[in-house]
Length: 224
Length: 252
Image (cartoon, rainbow over all chains, first blue to last red; front, side, top):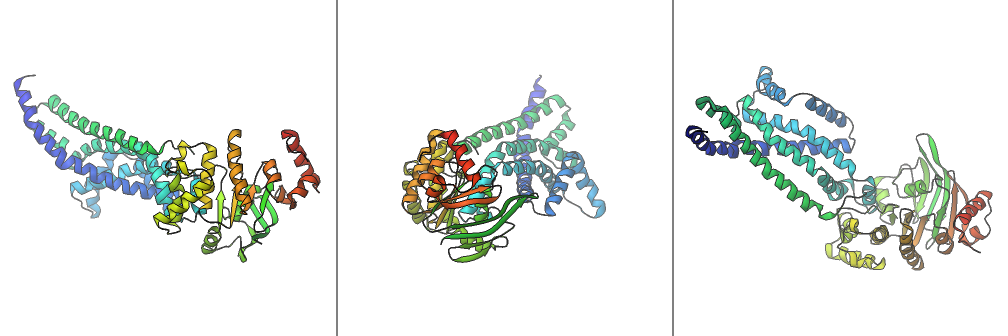
């Protein structure tokens, strides 16, 4: 590599990291928070077998999992304005990413809720606890531990999915790399650089996941 | 009289499990429910604490009359506040340590203060010999220890009666003794207990009343000494003989 390429890489690095911090990370955090809320609600509705709503939840999961994220982004950002729903690019990205990953996470959370044996719920009733108390003190804490690896997976996946927001004009890290590349035409170098920054973020999250799993493991095994 | 039920019926998927059970448990009784598997013993016990809702039946509990099919949430809560239930698989809360397993119900449902709940829990754990394991998690305990903690969790509720659903069936043989010892101690202290069990020796030596069930019906009930010495019904005799030939440890 010659000096010019090195200089491009060094000059672009703080800019790219800046966009990672200012846009990619907040976009991930907000989308993931939305996905988390959706997934817990959707999973709980199905776990509790709430009539009608359970059907709606399955419908939501079916639609989301059956269509590509990129198409969903286009539909919401470019398609919806023709029925009068106009969203800014950033909130549109948050909504689509959140609802998209939320569908996958809902399945993880539902599986985790089901993994808590119903005997503990009955034991809760027998010491006069009500449904809400049993859920908050017994079922959800245990389900969270079971779902944790899968939810970590979703978070890591979401970091990378935010790059798709570039396609609906969100100026995030990848879009910034494209813009810089438009001036200097160093695709290999710049896209490698941006890939490494994604990799660095995901590496940090992987460490956090392992640390979290260790913390949660202190209850011992999850034997029934 | 502590508990009386009349005409309890329960079906699952069109299959009748309980075909009209009548039963009485007096205060201080240790009543054993015996019978071959599939006879409806566990279902009966679960109906008594409303873990299953009976299709029909009436209950007089502690002087109060209840309809077992249509009992309201508040009525069920009132009954449960005077009962404890010990499960075959212990069903300890796996995310709570031993102490918190016992205090959780007291503090959430009972709105008891932490210090008081802890006092009461430690007393109960003392009674079952598990006080020294208060900070262990269920996964760190043997089955026998877990079951003793489960009994302590029930005792801390200060129940009028404790229901035991095959409390030793999931245990390795060498761990059965420690649980039976605890139960024997409770019986000696005058606790009213209703025990679904396959432990004939326990039924014979600890219980004072036996209820023999087969195919969803009570075939025979009466004082346990009488039941084991002179079973009236052919099916009771067959059952006792089968168990005898298997274990050979019941001698008169």
